[in-house]
Image (tube, rainbow, N blue to C red):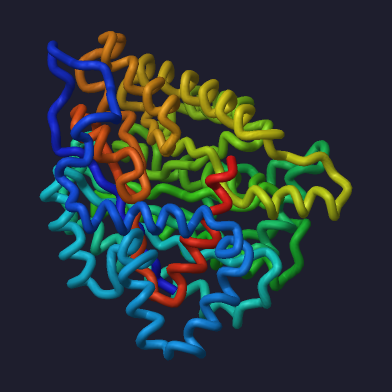
Length: 431
């Protein structure tokens, strides 16, 4: 299923000498109409309503039976769908883009399709190939969007690895990677070489069928990365579940080896780091050092995280340590540490390091903008650390203070909007 998110960039210029402290009060929303603000408040309250979070799927099915699909769809379009989603057709997406541009913002699109770990097996390679086609179309759509000032004319789009490679494969790779003394047959360099050459890759921990699927998955990942590179579109690889993170990191590292070298003008491939996980700061530091040693550009989207309840449930069932931070405050401290690390790297490593500050937390936003306010960065450095927002949660306040903003909106069927946004994403607000 094709779902496309939009992310918005401020069109304002770099900070001026009369920079004022960031303030989310006053006239931050003066460009929004009363109806838009009322809908946003209603949707916010709905997504924070426990019965909707817990029973959203059942409520959606009930509304379709009681009201018919047409009326149920109209209600979704007037609420959750209309608030978060760019549209179902290219024409609707383009109309959404024009509205955002009128507010001085720029869109980013995404295909957030993913394979749930506990879902039924998909029908062969056809499902993944269909997702690849959707991603290539998303690249084309992204190429037609306004250029991003923070990436030297590049635009960005987002995808998930398990839309192109099965969760079963990722689980098997993770089990092998995490064993002591794992061999170099699963190194990023070897996978990158297989991507580039198209030669058959045989990994001893996988059977024949799994090796074939790995080769097909590498080919899909490389095809979308190459096409995106040719179209001057960078790829944001979204985070997924902790228990497949090592495999996801390996595949992203392989893409980075191939496409983030200085000769390619990267970073073209960005990875996502979730601050609500206990080991994120150490992984971020380690990965940044590895990229620097290898001479690769390093692109990071820093988020608080998602999948909180499921991560905790899995750790309880398996009798393993809970990988998540114990509470909201601990997640905030973790985000702050990771953000400070990345802001320093962006400042010190120039165009070889980029950061996307993906947070609606006011203190996190203030921490990032403080460097602009006190003039700690050289001219243009702020453009390598734009902000990612879901529709308007902090964007209007940031835009008024001349920040680079991206706002998150999908291209998704109405029937999936409540599931994905009202139910799935509301979990992240608990962190």
